[in-house]
Length: 140
Image (cartoon, rainbow, N blue to C red):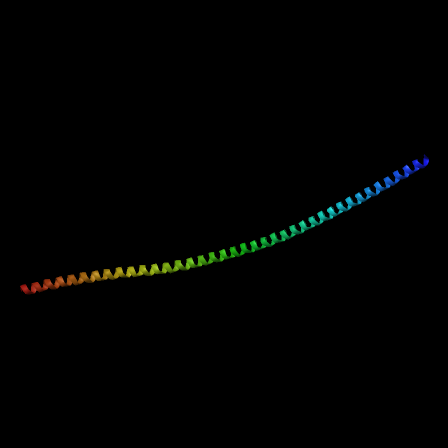
């Protein structure tokens, strides 16, 4: 009986050792799986951080380009405004000079017409006087 009990005990110990080895193997496998998952997740997060940094650099570069373009446009706008103001002033001066010249020509024409009218009146009066003298001379 003791021998049978000893053998049963030995079989139970072997069974327990076998189960313990299986459990250790399962635990090691689970630990390796978790470790791999952790490493994979960590690497994924590192890649995401790297992508975010790259996107941040792209955004920063675009912001610099936009600011440069805005500055260029503003400088061009200022230059065009100055050019417009200069051109407007030059045009205004030119138009005023042309109007002054035309106005002067009109005044000169009016003066000439007045002079011609006076001459015509003088000639008409002189003719009238000559005709009157001629009639008087004919009557005598």
